[in-house]
Structure formats: C-alpha cells, structure tokens
Image 1 (spheres, one colour):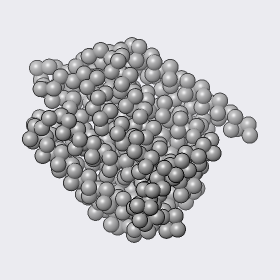
Image 2 (tube, helix red, strand yellow):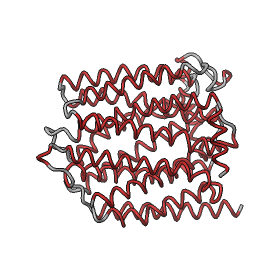
Image 3 (spheres, one colour):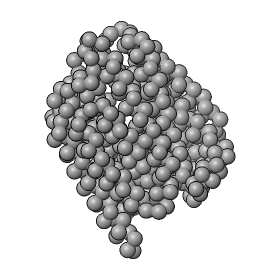
Image 4 (tube, rainbow, N blue to C red):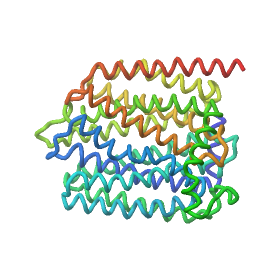
Length: 425
C-alpha cells in the first residue's frame, strides 16, 4: 500500500519523530492520570456512583475550560508551540503531584476536582498545540498519513497508559495516589523530550506572534472573532467539525453507559468492583485496537472515498452495529462494539483533522483547533447529562442505545449528501 511507504518516509523525518515522542509521552500520561481519576471517583468502594454523579464530574472537569478554550487558541497563535509543550508539561507534572497529595489526605470532593481541573486546563493548550504544529514537520502530500499516525498513536499511548493505570490499581486497590504520581513522571518526561526541538521550529512564524502577554490578551476577543469568521469561510472544515461533534456526543453517551455497566451490572459487589474495573480495562484495550485499525485503514479509505465519504461510512457502520451489539447488554457484544466504535470514531476524527488542517491557514490553526477541542468537550459533557437522565443505575437503557443509533444514521446520511455535492462540483 502507498501509505506504508509514506509512513516509512514520515518516520525518517527527525522533527516529526521528535514531535511524535512528545505526543506519546504526554498522552500516555493523560491516560494514566484520567484512569486514575476515574477509578478513584467511580470504583472506590465507599462511593455510590450514579450516572448523575459521572455527569457532574465531567461537567466540573470540562465545562469551565470549554468556555475559555478559544482564548487558549488565540494565545497558541502567539506563543511558540515548543515552549507550550515544555512549560505546559512541567506545570502538569507539578499539578498532578498535588492531586496525589489530595488523594492521600482524603480531602472533600470539590478540592479534589479543583486540582484535576487545573491539569485538564493545561491539557487544552498541549493537545491543540500538537495538532496545530503537525503541518510544520510534514509536507502537505503526507498530511493524511501523518494524521493517521500521530493522533492515533497518541490515542493508543493514552490507552496503554490507562491500561497500565488499571493494572496498578487492580494490583493495589489503595494505590490511586501512586498511579497519579506515575502520570506526573510521564508529564515530566514529555517536557524533557520537547527540548530536542528548537523553540522556533513549530511556529507560529515570528511576524505573526505578539510576544507581550498583555498585547495577546487584549486582542483575544478580536482574534477569536477572526477565527470563527475564518472557519465560516471554510465550509469543508465547518461541516466536518459539525459531524464529528455529533459523533463525539454519541461516543460520550455510550462511555457513560459502559461505565455504569462495569460498575454495577457486570460487577460483583462482594469483590469491591475489581471485576468491573478489569472489564473496563478490557473495553479500553479493544477500543484501542479499533484506533489502530483506523490508522491503517483511513489513508486508503480517504483516498478511495474522500474524507466525507469515509466519515459517512464510519457513521453508517456505527448506526447499524451499535444497536445490534449493544442491546443485549452483555459483556462480549459490548466489547465488540467498543472495537467498532473505536475504529469508526477514530477514522472519522483522522479525516476531520486532515480537512481542518488543509482548509485553514496556519495563522488560525491554534484558534480553530481550540474551538474543535471546545466542541469535543461540550459534546461529551452534554452526552453525559443526557445519559444521566436516561440511564438506570445498572446502565441498561434501550432508549439510549436506539437514540445513539439514530444520531449516527443522521450523520451518515448528511455526510453522504455533502460528499455527493462535493463530487458534483
């Protein structure tokens, strides 16, 4: 396959490998940290978790920074992205150490959430910066392959980090603080890895930067408005983001459902929830396998079907297979569904990333990817809120499964129509 040859070329590019290393270390730390938090919040024996509690936790961790995310994008278009990776990961390492201390101290939940919120705040800068920097280290002809490898490899690294966190948690039920400290160590490694790149390498170009923080902040609103106008003028990017947001909503609703199934329907209460936690880890693993398959298939599929066509195929497959596998509410079919949704969600995201990167100007990429991040967060939190209203305690909801299937079907039909319109031009 031509993509294999392109992949070999990409891996020979020194700066691409260095940026990829930062992503792998940073997102593996994210996986460790996030799973440690989930295990502490959802699977602690003393906590009686409900769908509403999960939705509330997601809202506390994500919504505040969904509101300020676009402002982060304006700063990203003025700050050197290499420096964002260096200082952002150093700060996250320090904040994660603080989270570990709070777990050991058994502080009130609001203080624990405030600490976790601080880590996710910095995450907005790092992840958006990684996407915005990618076109600086690869040529346009290989951008689809780079988007298959880099974000998908990061997602796999997060999955691996989450799996490691689960293994450590299962080995020692009282090891939440130690697992968070492991995440802090990986954040530190990501910061050190960024030093292998020069500060100017990843942009933005000096003539586009405002080095004074005060000047950058004073132009935030104007810069955000410019970014929104720029996106509105790029119809392909706007449509892709809209479709991906709905698919993210579907994925979020199903994530809450699986969490509740693992916590109650598939968990032996007398075992302290360890079997449910193990099943959650298995679901993460098979979903990660779906991400890997998406990375292999997507460059070929986009070449044959176009980005809209491939996204439509992903949404259509999810619309058919998700209810067929989800409605039994049994572990094996749901695990197969996790693989399918990992493949389709990541395949659509790779196509969306490529459309956005190739459609918007470099001077606006930080803002656009921060808006992208905001849409992801709002969709996920909204999905958790809807799931909280629809899910019983054990996670079995036929109505939720059918609603998600209908949304996938609507996205597939809409993308198919947009693809035909684009082909007819």
